[in-house]
Image (cartoon, rainbow, N blue to C red; front, side, top):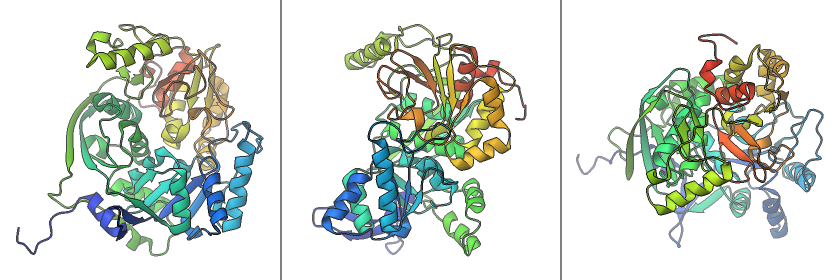
Length: 476
């Protein structure tokens, strides 16, 4: 390579260069933010800080507000929810009105979970920088955007300046190859990845995901995979755009002026041939059975047909102690099996698995069957649009006739800070993203799984292989 030829650049290099505003004296850089998403939980203090400083939102047209975390998902809902929730919902409404911000309020035909609404409304495009006061903002990296979660003080900074000051993050690329049975899903893949590398296996600010297993996912599967990037330690998980990405955007940005030119521009957000990241991982994964978490981190994962790990299989004494604590909390024993464990609750929804394809997969298992008598099962669409689409397909009837609750959009049982909670000691199979102690309520025992696995658990009243229920090649 001649001295005049610039070195090849990674996708991150291009994103960084395109958004770099200035180098600061303390070593950080000022980065322009293209899209800012806010919700009722993490924004009230940020808006209050603006007000105290006498500042306005710099670019309200780049900011979008959504109520999702502390809202009720019951039909006929109002602002009333957990103590303090109504005040937060009202504050978001007032702040959005004061600053001229587009607000997806309760009752809005586009309302829903922030990470579901933003892509389906065409608000996020390849090459964008996107931030939100929520760690699962990494979901949106599936569109080729650099998207990450920020704290309340950073929310205020973006509102005031449309920039953020940050050190250049550590970067890596994870190549995912191998095989995955057709009856399995992106959730099974994500859980297997977490099992393989652990909750700190991608402890970087930016992780690009690529490889044949990624290429084989549809757009909604890619959202699921990127959603769980933060659980591996990656603040941002990004997939470079391809034909699947562009077709998704073509459908959701149909009203955009000069769409053809935009699509051509978005397709260019690729790393150069030969460009390498400081850290590269090549992984070969084989998935031939559904995956479930057994413990209290998303990396404590087993296949449905294998025993739980023995303590002597831990890497060291510290990990063995962590496993024992997880077993005690979950009411399980090393060497036992998840298959056959009684289930009390089932939750299908969240920004991980609350999209239409997730509900279609679950309904395929449920159709014509009934929820086990002891199970309280609920389906919470990720957005009002997903809910309408599902109802147009008759999925609401499939779920309700089986004994599931059919709810309104919101974070619901994923986050455990609203009315939808698992009672102490109850075992829940959930399509959400975190199974920490108390995540779904004090003493809740959570097993993360795919929509099909969750649906099958609701029917059986226990953890089972969903393939026992699933008609081969059937259409919903």
